[in-house]
Length: 148
Image 1: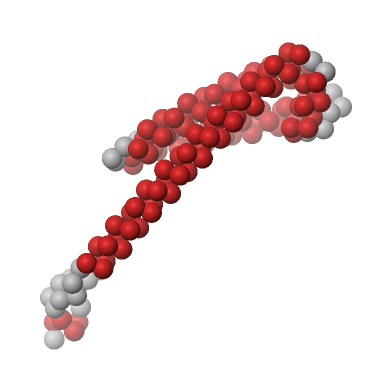
Image 2 (image 1 turned 90 degrees about the horizontal axis):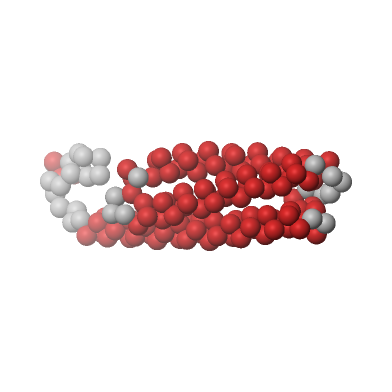
């Protein structure tokens, strides 16, 4: 049972490391001038990895339950306290997860900054456009009062 849990932790660690690598690619894409071409395959891979991580977590929780431990962090802490190999792999997994969490938080901030910039640029464009007769509106038509 402990070997199966150790194997699951190793697989989970590998998946989290891969996820962190994808997040670094996402950081580069979000920092690019034109990220839209780069992001779709990254988002697809992230979605795939999130599904895999959910499966591995469920397997880990099931194994913990079979061993008489509670699910989640508390159960892993108890299991790790009873086995040095589990403790070592659990520590590696937690460090990888913390690193991925930092990358993800950074990417969220990059997205927020880009969205804020775009909103400010849009507002500036809307304010600086004079409402003169004959100019077309946002819908591409000349307003009725300008034609009359």
